[in-house]
Length: 143
Image 1 (cartoon, rainbow, N blue to C red):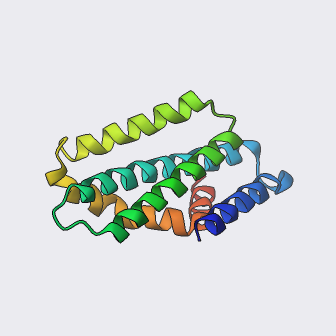
Image 2 (image 1 turned 135 degrees about the horizontal axis):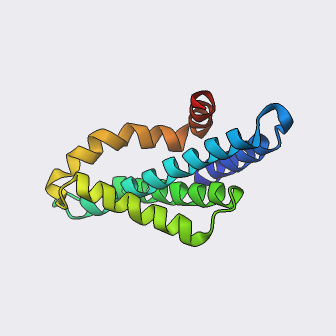
Image 3 (image 1 turned 90 degrees about the vertical axis):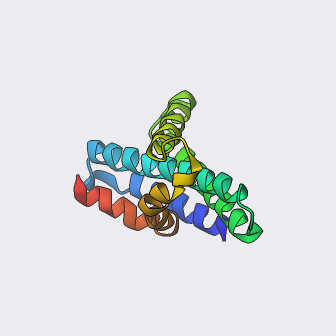
């Protein structure tokens, strides 16, 4: 399933990039930059959720494994889109670091407040991972 979704994203991004003159280079950059940020944000969310749930007393290994898979898909997707943008690895790494720091601040640096980011990112990140084509359309329409 993970490979299928990752392949779908690759095909989708490639198709988007090859769509010719119908979409300007500036618009492509805008869409891909925002999509890369979406995947980076979701990578951070899934990693923090995985760590937070791992600390609990009633650890559900299946849920943690799902979060781990989702974080891997998010990171691979962020990297793939970053490559399409010619982003340096250092820039992508810095973006991940800033995303982690932002979420930690939102929680007040305390996992007891995890519900703050759960409420804000859970459904959003699920949709980014499961329906990346809709997220691309969102950014394309927002341009």
